[in-house]
Image (cartoon, one colour):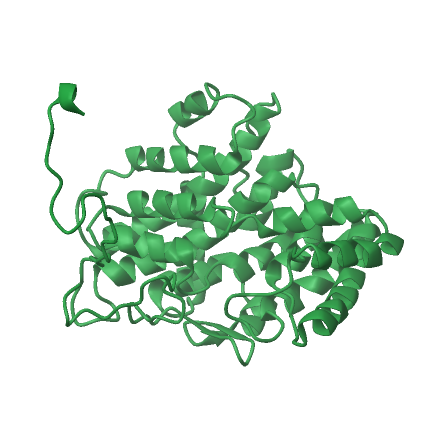
Amino acid sequence: MNDCTLSVINTGLRGVDVASSKICDVRGKEGKLIYRGFLIEDLARNASFEEVSFLLLYERLPKKQELENFSQSLKQKRNIPENIFSFLKTLPFDMNPMDVLQMATPLLMQNDHKVSEPGIENTLCSAENLISGMASITAAWDRIRNKKEPVPPDNNLNHAANFLYMLNGKIPDDETARFFDTSLVLHAEHSFNASTFTARQVASTRAHIYAAVSSAIGSLSGALHGGANVRVMEMLKEIGSVDRIDAYIDNLLSSGGLIMGLGHAVYQTDDPRAIIIAPMSKRMGQIANQTLWYELTRELEKKGKAAFKAKKQRDIFCNVDFFSASLFYAMGIATDLFSPLFAISRVSGWSAHVIEEQFAMAAPKPSLYRPGAEYVGDYCGPDECVFTDMDDR
């Protein structure tokens, strides 16, 4: 290794700043999440997903006409090319929805005739195409794999309500649509997590935004990044009733297991998104007549925190996945769609990061990511190996 090289070997880059960004600030000690200067609590309370997407992409809140134009542009991009439907229908019905989304997302560029022309305006237009198209792909695949025809979009509905409509074929009630919209806001951005870092690394090569976003989807599909709320829901189903929580926790902690949904790589207090989403989960359970899942989650939170404190002598806190599981499940959404829901929300943040990376919006100039690696191979001692003929090996 070069003497001038900073070594962060075996850190997973945790605690290592690799770029400057103006997009998102995660303050772990304070439990604050900030998009472009705005607290997540204010955005969740007051802004739609369309407004937040505009904020992330354009660095400011939209004026009324700007929001109308942006929303209309997203609506125009909901109709994905017919050959994407044809492609989806060729796939095995048991394919993981994240793998399907990653494969199908680059196909959205066929209607994007300026994708090969560099420039912020063209990339922003591509971002809109991704925001709308990925939602349409996700809804279409769920219907196709269940042997149903995809539902055409309803342009009288906003982004969140339209997704639920394309998924179920029914216009959602106002409360359900609002809760889903808020959940999209909460998941839209979270600084340099693994998938965002992946998107920026690919973007640094000057690959187009479709390549960067499809790579980010692949990163999100990994068990250590996305899918935590899937495992939360599996845990809740396994527990089944409140009176089984104590035994479940004892068995889990004694075997070195983790309580899914408790703990976070950054937050040292309750995830602000979890605080916002918890009452939505409670109310959604009431609407769907499925109150058990929220009740289990709340009781598991209380007892899990206490047990962890007793065993580890330190506190543990909720993350957003802890309550989003019961929220989405009460909405009737299949558990293996939970990660795609994350992706169709986070694409706004990914796109903002791609733009910031490629056009040096927060740095003096664009940079190609080119980290090194410490070579630890030892095959032939201090000297190079000697190539031998096939018959002499």
